[in-house]
Image 1 (cartoon, rainbow, N blue to C red):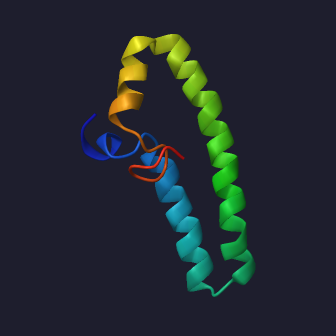
Image 2: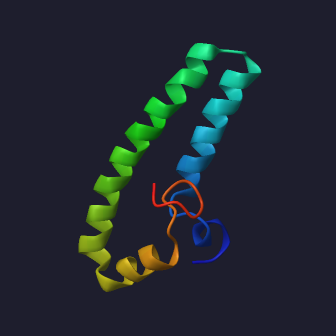
Amino acid sequence: TTGFYGIVRNPIYLGELLLCLGGALMFRSVIGVALVPLWWAGLLFLIVIEEETLERELGEAYLEYKQQVRGRIIPGLPV
């Protein structure tokens, strides 16, 4: 609940998206920028599966963490 994990639940995925977007912008790739939302959707699908497993394994402790840290990838947003 401290550091980056106190801001978003998946800071590595946030970094991955920013890296992909930055690379697409750096190379001025319209296709690359257009593919970032698809990558984001794929990560959200993966996160849902991971969170179901964490809820089963960690129970109430993980549910409390989810209440405290709302953002999955974007700080403050439940997406």
